Length: 299
Image 1 (cartoon, rainbow, N blue to C red):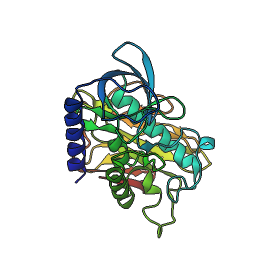
Image 2: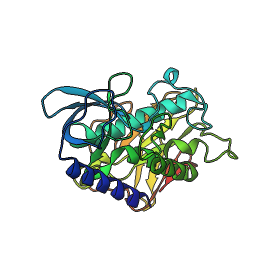
Image 3: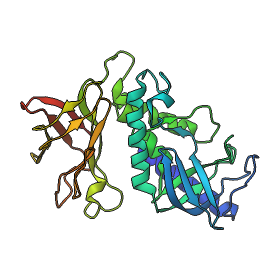
Image 4: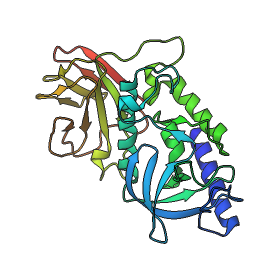
């Protein structure tokens, strides 16, 4: 269903482009008469829903992804209950960082298609362009919602709001991404201690050549630092990574990359030569130094 929505949406965008016969945005606060589009280069990523691009005329613009909102990257800039029943702003900040990382890893230096919406203003009150980002034929705004990295920004008017709301509803019911905090109103529990925050199992581009596009994010929901020496991550096929040392600060996190690199306090590398996380379904488990299963994450 999700793929059908994405394909239909992208098809409509392409049809609109051809019928409009134009590749420039209207640069004022009026609504466009047709959804217009252009190819741009992503220069940098501010956060999960905001990017800086180079336009075809070589000018630079800040683009706000239309129709969605990702959490802020610091606790003080998030608000309780902005994302359903989630009242822990530190938890939201972790997901704000994850959304920013996902957008940065996917789009930085890439050529993407920006598409406007006939039902939405061309700019927001801060002067940023409002647009859908089409990357490799896929609606990236919708992808963030379906991965549980963003909510639908219902305060905005845009033509694909109902499709986005359907994706958000599926993510909430499935406990995907940030919605694993509480899968529904009858489950008030939240992650406690150290747990698997997120798994990026489908790397951008070719998994074989982008091993570090696959990664496992481990977070500490508590206030107290936790030593993870002797802890291990295991994929369902039995492949295991063990932490030789390390501490996750309170409300901090460690990211385990599948490929090679230099270990730091926050980034660890599995040093595998081939992808290990199944794109069509898999599970990873986190065990403490006593062999007790602490957390698991399946898809």
